[in-house]
Length: 245
Image 1 (cartoon, rainbow, N blue to C red):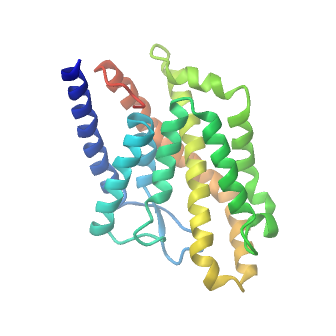
Image 2: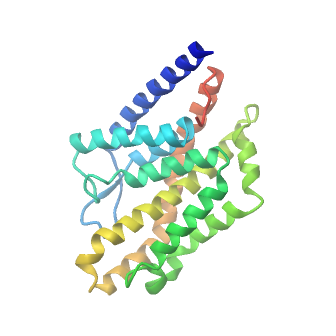
């Protein structure tokens, strides 16, 4: 028993290091410009972070993305949030791993609390300036708390029906990338708010522009992560790896 546990632990840590390396590489690629972020970009690392969360589980996934993010900070130029730019990706990995492990109520409550803080952030929060920005997050939360979410959990355990597995992975990763978006947006408010608090019109214009852009952005990220993640889930299960930690 101890030998098997040690072998499993060694396999998990090896995968964590491998995925941390993948995350570091992905973080060198730009995906989308960050609206209002002064020439900064959302990095492709968010795609790999979602995959890491669902493959390694919440805690080992957070470890891998954090290690990859710290290494990336020293290799590549830092992102819009300085050396902490990888934190929204850590949040997405954590959420994906927890949701895969059926912790939907914990995910839902955490998501709701952070969304409320983001929405009602003093002066510049979208609840004050442009509430329509929140439409997709409200829809995501409604689905998370709905009776449909447990069915997605069943799809995630599907080994024979590739479509059901891909659908389960896709929905899970889409919700996780929405959560990462909330964390990133909250960091954006906290970092840029002191300098631009007087430019309320600029904030409102940013929220208006993002209302229809971020759903496309999040959908693209989730699809890319699903294409990578579904194949990895199936392959690792074949070799006896316990996906999701």
